[in-house]
Image 1 (cartoon, helix red, strand yellow):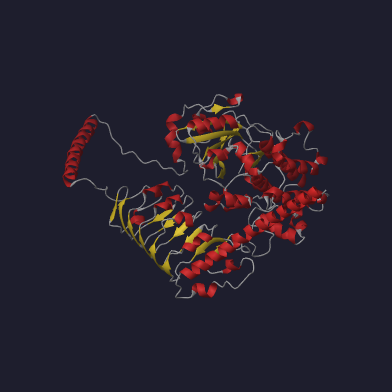
Image 2 (cartoon, rainbow, N blue to C red):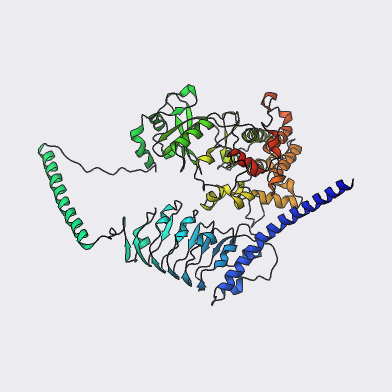
Length: 621
């Protein structure tokens, strides 16, 4: 008995420490952002008193720093900094190293000030998730740090109008997300890196820069050797000119008119199709015997050469085209965006996904590789996706009735639970949203895009999607994922919980229409606020109330709230979610006994999420 009591005391102390540590980690995250802004203010000279007047730290209310001049927060009531914009303030000093304490920062603008010194060589460590970095029109000197190439989320990098010297690091060409880059009006020399979307003006007034496509070739050879090259080029040029003239005269004498080839217009933005036109005879590998004989030319014809008018979906993993075959059969063709897998790896993944079959999953019917292009063929879903059904563009469109919403939730939960628990290998979806839940002609839900995360660029995650501007996806992302970038089954549960909230409220995951004026949070945050004030029932879509479903609606809402719990361990497993939803819809007979499944390894239900991930990647510790 004494031993048992001692054991209980130890457990109680352990639980207390867990709670305290959890609480302290949250407070620490808030305190570090406050400390971050304090160090920035203290390290910069502010002759115009912009920061001195606005940045008042004698305040303990939640989100008080979000009201500071130049500060954007992730949420107005949370002291977590998203962007810092301090341009045109006349600030003096050096780059504020204390900015590393704003650990969630994605945007920094210090342009048009009087800052000096060098750009920190370890800037990628100070700004780990930066997407926009503007340091233009200051007095920064020294080299451009090569470590900027490690800021893999960068979209905008402006360093123009400074006193930077040395070369532009060639590693910056690895920043494949970079859309805006400028180093004009500096003292730079050497080779220009191959950075997309740049113009001559982005490099202007750097007398020492050289290299294609904007300046002369870099000349590093001895003078005599250069003269030899020039002379040889001149002789070669004359020879080629003579040959071309002779050929032209020959064809003219034969009465053949030579016309200048007109550059083809590409109004549909599908220039990539030109690179694969010579491969039209390429076979499409099909998993479905009913349409086993298909070639790339068939897909091109069925999509009108992948015309933009045939696009029926567009997301992070790629664009989806509707394809209509000569016999009237409709398919969907997904063009994968930036798959980083080799042909061998891609074929292996496709063969695995081709065997994944379930009533509530969109079946992969085939695939095709054409040079760098990766095309996936799916069965067409007549009623589009759930997002468009819940949030139609036409205000007068009829809303979805409750039994249909419940049936879609149960079917989707069943498919996702099967991926988590019964599929071999088990699959974490990583991209659950109402846009990837497709509906067939009978409104049977089919989960799409499962397994595609493994084919994408490793940094192409929810976070990288968000920082590239697709803010809609952020509403589905589990909070722990933004901190760790580690996908887990409980992260899928959170995302699915957001879909359940969409179904029960009729609201979008962001931009909640029924929220109070000034509310800028997500759907989950709105629900959390209502729950804390005992107003949860007011979130239910008004079109569903008073029709005999009110009890089911509240049960459904409670399940959704469990799924979006802040703490992953408090969320149910997908198998449990399916069972809870199935119990709510028992009177409708949506499911049959032969569809009920048991997790293939019930012991996994109690394993930590990180161990489950390790098993799936065959890296069991």
